[in-house]
Length: 274
Image (cartoon, rainbow, N blue to C red; front, side, top):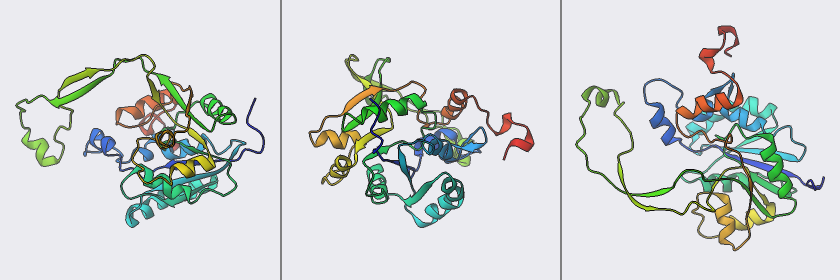
């Protein structure tokens, strides 16, 4: 059965991350440095992500938590506040270092009458509507729901880096474009793949449960469900989707455009680029 009409979901989009891996893979010569500003068919990634939720009947509020530091926060507001405001989203200041600080800051902005809180990666703009429906519907029956895809790749834990003599590229070093490629590592172990899921977002929680999870002393965790699990509460996995990618490295933008069926700025006629 669908969620009761009384459900009011507040969506939190943590958007404070420095995107270090993205900046490294995009290289320091050219390219947009923030993945949230990348062009997806004429609209930035962050706007596309907000648009996944802003028309949804059950979504009562959208809180976008931007950078913490004054200069970065003001620049973020300058770029995004007008457009996101029109979409009904509010922007708040995020955390200093960790994602959990950013979510905690956004929690303070969530309306008191929200029955559920969804946390969604700001850099996940391709989430199919049916994944959002599945998670929202399951949240009517379960207090904590996450979308996941069974792992199809073999997962190995990497150990020490293999020592190699690297040919230095003096020009690249001068230009700040020295290679940041991952070094070879020794395999430490191979994990049993059966029963492993790659977890995506949106992750949806009963509002009181997520607030309780964030009231804990130690908040270090890679996702919000992890904090809920630490309380001993049950988290339920529903089917995610392989198209629900998170933009993490430069090549991911081309994949996102392909999934969405849109072009980048170079692929559009000049008068349609803005």
